[in-house]
Length: 532
Ligand SMILES: *Cc1c(COP(=O)(O)O)cnc(C)c1O
Image (cartoon, rainbow, N blue to C red; front, side, top):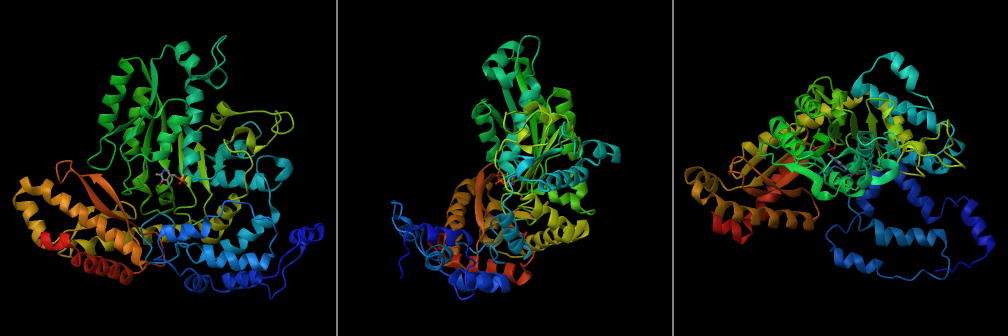
């Protein structure tokens, strides 16, 4: 390998010189652009390598002394990194919410890096700031459907914002509850508000014993992080049991009132539109009523399910979302945008002023700098990816994708139901479902003598874990697993396979193959022998 020399000349070339067509990086680039699927299938190869083995490629903790030529480094990346990556584009990779992307994001990503705009302030993002505001407006209109004069008045106003772009659902949830917290504990007379004086002083001023957020057991763990960073504390995220997989409005109301009687302020109720584990949608309309009765903020975490609003056939599932004070969306999930594209939206364009910050050199009063009311500082122009997607797919294109995913999930649920050795655990509402292997004989025993259910379910848990691991290690296909309390088994928590059918390239044959593979793996286990 040629050794590069640390010199200004070398650095200058690194910053400016276009790579020759024959250089390694240029070859990679051409291959990626010409045929991504082929590139991935050739270079992402070592799927069965253990994590421990891969860690050995990355165990040198000293900064390399000498520079490297770009081409040499590209070689290094291919071998150490790319080869051992996960092929999330694979149609058999149906375990998580990360899937194949439309090809145009690849050249657009280059454009994004090429322009390297910083959305924190207008001075580094002219054009990108109005674009981002427009995208937020489009998503706001999709969720809330306010009238034209509302959008004319607020879309580009320096004094209002319809929401904020951010890196993902986590930051969006934190941002939503941050706004809610500051609105719930505002300045009052000589008291300067929670934002200035802190939570302790604010609770004392308002005479609250404590502050909580209510959601269900299926609430995403980012809500617990939010409770932590906002000073509420993780144990003040109240997660209610949900054996039906959705938050029971009556239960939320009773719990909220019980807490209020103890002088505890209910900051917010969080409804979920598309739970991460099973894809269920909480009864948003009724939860909006409950939030109204408790006089608290209503937040909807629609990171996964929000895109369902594109579908005329299915958008009714999210009925009531338009009553939420704030909504979280992730474009990097069912809008097929690369990762790093989350959004929080506020029904009231004035809401985000509760977190507005100013600084002298940027974010001056009256400026249109987005950074004044976003949690994050420097931020890239990911909004462009969503902007492009929205135009290239159109609402109708997204509708097709959403409808197709839900149909596929229903189809897969049918395959499972009609297979003697599988048991469907949760029906798909959106494109997620959970199931497990359960030999026909065991299914009969579970029905005939429920006293044995606890014991049998524990054996089945072992089976699910073993099969999921081996299937993952074999590297041909991937489903994930989780643990759920289910009504069917008297609230017993069981281990299940979890699938997300969002990859448009996944076919019925792939799904059948995945079941066949799972059955084959299962039949080689000792647990299977014990069970049958
Ligand atoms: C994915 C997801 C999140 C977290 O979003 P990130 O983009 O991973 O930060 C939050 N809530 C729900 C329901 C999600 O599906």
